[in-house]
Length: 225
Image 1 (cartoon, helix red, strand yellow):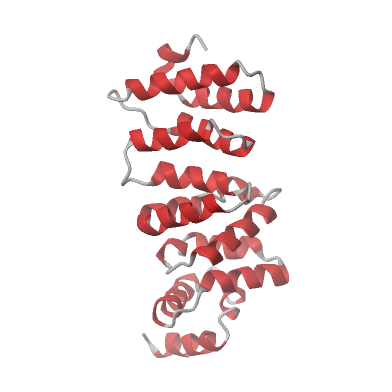
Image 2: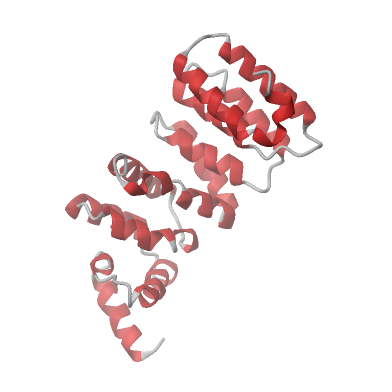
């Protein structure tokens, strides 16, 4: 660590929240080094500090973009990450970043699959409705589990009494990358969708229609739907 970097490191060690207001385009690589040093070597929970800063001044976009490239490299704590995602989900509803808010959990899942699986269990134990889209991303991006396991998890969700969980299951079934060897899974998916469509629930039907649209690459098997 060079002298300038070391001086900034000492400065932000005394004021870790200050790192977020000091970020600009020209110094983001230096700030990334300091962020990781504080997190890995000094056990600073950067996500907790990020939540505090957002709650104080509402600076969502800059913090999101900065953490977007770095969050998967941090040592994370389940409770604080949950609080961060809950806050982001709330504040990004009308923001242009809304469509990207699940990229971070996707990257965490790919780089830290063991933590992601533990975090998914933590999410499932919560009573918060926002968690299901995060659960969907974790399941889809857990390379350690097979398509059969992913399919089983999503299929089970479609039997829930919670609408958001049912939609999560439907979305997940539509997003699984079915291979030529997954014809049995695909048949179960289409059978599930037919059953859900017969319930004539307009929100559920909309989700099923969207998922069928994602299965365009097997059009010959879904055309009748």
